[in-house]
Length: 542
Ligand SMILES: [Ca+2]
Image 1 (cartoon, rainbow, N blue to C red):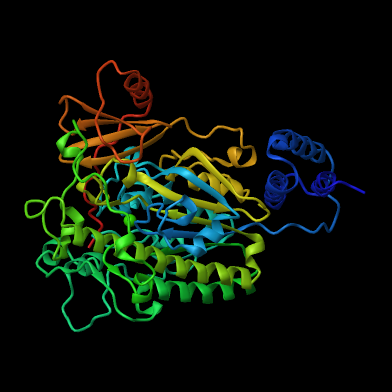
Image 2: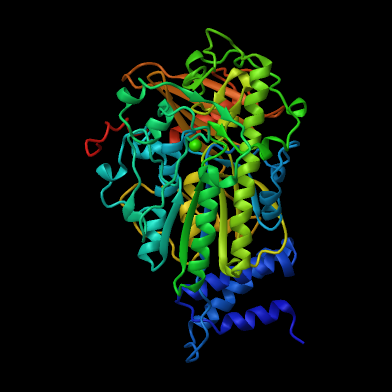
């Protein structure tokens, strides 16, 4: 009797070497082998054998009428403002059963990072495979096609290769004078809301609702603030995420009948503010047991402009400014943390519906599923809320990837960036990225997924502009260096250096000119291309 390994190699020999399906199958076989059939330590040996088998078949013609393996589909789940507050990442209180179950049969990247901790830039990073520092697209109101008219986005690449591509919910950031990219999709974007309230007793639009509805800034800022949370006994579909899940379930049923591979992007809005979440998800938590931030002051010796107060959180009613209360009263901190976790559980339940339908339709057998958070989040740590800074918690993201055929769990601390996802998905599906007009900073980590001994990045690179300066950060396994360069030419650069040996919240800037970690990370930063200056606000917008 053939061993499973021999059996797979025999099957592999039957494939046509040049076609996409063949490459996809090769990957499938490698995953199956790596996770299910051969031990991890022998994966590299097995991979070499696979390559040898592929080389052998290149010299022989494929048999006629061979049954071709279908290309993979992709279900890409985007979650807004989700830090790894999930059971799968060891969070002690998160109620996230659907994502946790999904993660049991997937790659869990425990050290994945955004390239810029804000929605609009991070989604451009993902969908273009380009860092903000390479495009100059750091802010809202910049239509990327004005600067890269021939850019090929990740879904567009799949579309060009014969895929049906579609987006439901928040995929590109829509709002704050920024728009969807219709060219990326086979069918029009199925948009839904980010900010909304079930309580309709207040009839007037709130400030954040208007900004997400692309009402001009000047006009929106005259409107009243809306509540930061809402806890009513309403159905899941009362808010966007329930509706997005419902429409995704329907779309998957349609796609099952399609004879075309698909790339379906599904974007959920929670746990983004406001924490408008059905009461039953709030009820899953005992507020008294929620973790409170230990440290509510800025790291010692940090640069003042690197830290955050006010901003997004004070765009909501009843939230005090730092002048009024720094830190927030414990009762408010606890309520906001409760709302965030309720949002996590609500979105988890919606993702569960989508994944159940994927299984129900049988599409799970041939669909790669990715779960990605656009950036991290601060819940009062160091007195900071939301994102928009270069600190660890604002930049570390959940990234979970399931490839059909993968049979055992795999958690990894390998370093990867958001920009790496585009080339990785393309390679997994056997359609490597072509030359793109936009800079392509992403590096596929498929070699690592096929062989756990293969390297990913030595460090990740991200940035955030604050107070007239661009902070560029290099994060390796232990340290983060942030170089703050004023936009004004010739002005001196200032540095922060943080050590994460004792935890993920920055406590003290340890930068000194001769610190060995500084010298090492500074050399890495110097090897990166100089940052592209801020692009002007796009003229093409309304
Ligand atoms: Ca976001």
